[in-house]
Image (cartoon, rainbow, N blue to C red; front, side):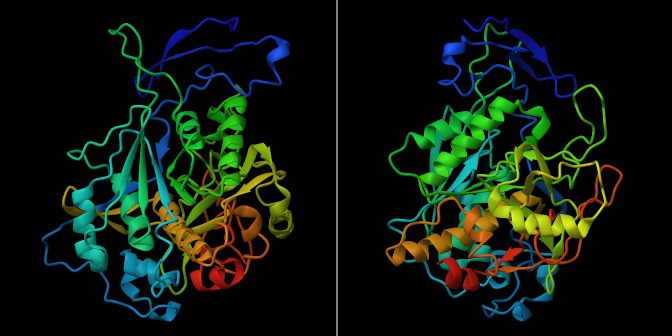
Length: 454
């Protein structure tokens, strides 16, 4: 039917097996009706679909006498953020930094925040309660709903670092807004001794098709997974990106982590056989229909964290909504890094948030976690509060976020003007006034955004 042959392929480093083909074809008459056929040429496995987080060295037992939570702080002014937040991030730090401390959600019967989970990562309810007891006592008793997609699980005996990070910080900022954790299966490795793999679909498509088939969808989503753009077939990436656009039209704002490899992605060399050294963008971070979140560190002022993924897509052209901001940056950049990136591509990240030192409860213990996968749920929590405010005023949710943050909302961010994201043997890009491919437009100020786009 597809004029092709499928084979079992083995990933030499990961030792994963998948059933794929090198090419396929359809009759010409079907081309305008079919966007992509899957699984076919996408060789990314669940293991290579990286979660953009990492455990940091210090782990503290939950019953320790060490107090890793900062004191309660006054909202609305960066000057009130304790110096402890430079190394140890809790909900109190983020609520002060991003000016959400005094806002109490009221549209909890209409507004929902969704967290997309993969890789058999399960969000743990007992750990969430411990987290609340430790870091946000007014939320004790709050919980989340798990929706299982395509065979996804909900194993409460196996808490995931990524899953717990995501749900604890979306809840920690947006409470009492209802949160939904989407546990998505898909793309298990093929086991040679068995007859066939149980499922060979790619999880992004599975998740998108499931969510788009629902009668209603959450107004805000966050996802902390990605891969090198060049490892994703162009037709697959285009189809997935277009489905994110459909979700935006449904009224959803979609956040993605920018990645943790600076400008390098997972590999600085092109995979077209030339092995040319180039900055490698991430996907879906490079999709123009998602809002991509980079990382910062420290307070008073915040600076770019060195691992913050950022750059320019080789698949997607720069959208008009970011023309002015990106052109200004490129004009200032001049010839620096010339030839290493696509100057006409979709530029990312769009925004940023803290990305290191997050205190997360995992199996009853407090661990310090870093990565832009901490940044994305943080920013999503702020957007969920903006959606709450709009819905409480009888307005529609924000939906596709990028056009409005690059225009009406552009002054609602704390501009980050120092730090860089080195990689590929270079210093990468440097944060500077205005938009930059390290921290985007900057970190959110809820009060300002509420006035501008609320």
